[in-house]
Image (cartoon, rainbow, N blue to C red; front, side, top):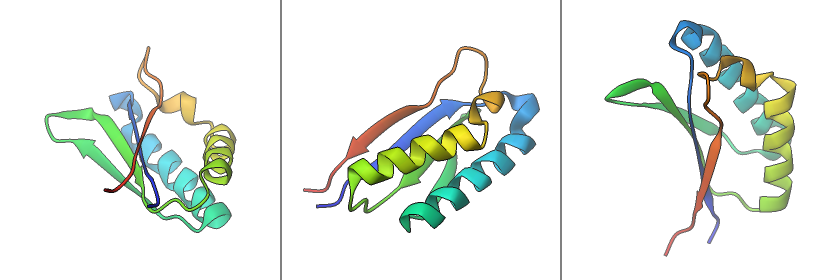
Length: 94
């Protein structure tokens, strides 16, 4: 079964609009490189906690490299809340 990636982090709320643009650019980059379309969500009770979801990854090694490169290219760290970092969880289907 193809794994699914769940990436969560906290954004600086004063950077939320810019953060949406950064995530859109990141996900466009990932889509162009891997063919995987990401989704963006936020926690219902905490608008600063966001999650990117990437489903049906066929080549984990290539996806990992593409995602890491896209994060770096878009300057993602500039929109994170102080002390936050991207955390990736990978789940598979039964």
